[in-house]
Length: 168
Image 1 (tube, rainbow, N blue to C red):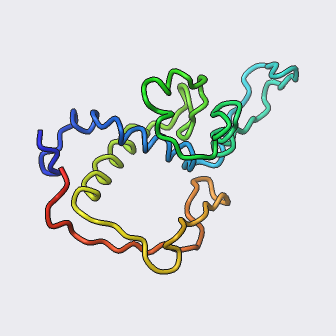
Image 2 (image 1 turned 90 degrees about the horizontal axis):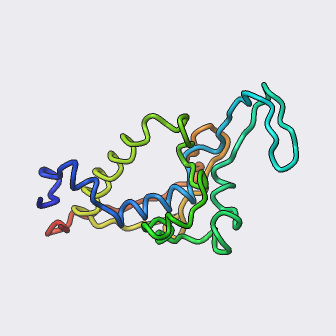
Image 3 (image 1 turned 30 degrees about the horizontal axis):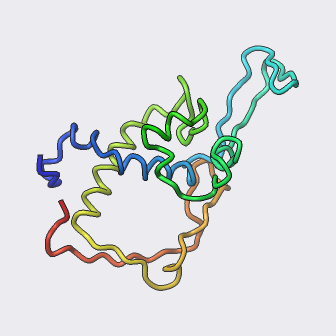
């Protein structure tokens, strides 16, 4: 296939390993949910403590994704190589949970993933992007006061310039 947006096939979208690595690492450092909540179905012992049936437990993907015990000494650094096939073998089960995990993970995950890949690949192939003005040297901070993490009121202006020749 040509990878031109008009002819981008499902198979081509599924075969973007570097894009997948970058998106996975971005979601590791900036997960969309600040917490995941689950009801405890039966008394459970975790690290020597009993969590009684009926209690609610919360997990913070943003905190878990930066734990050195799960991601190494450079857990705060952006490294898409964590998501190469070799890197994935090093990951502990449920260490990457931007959409939750197991049977309770977000049902729209695959749709969101494919939508991001299609739209961002089209945008990056057809436009040059440049951060301008206030906020050009850093991205907005995350706002953790809502269920879905969004940028704070800080703004980040982007200048779009259509490429003379699309990148293929």
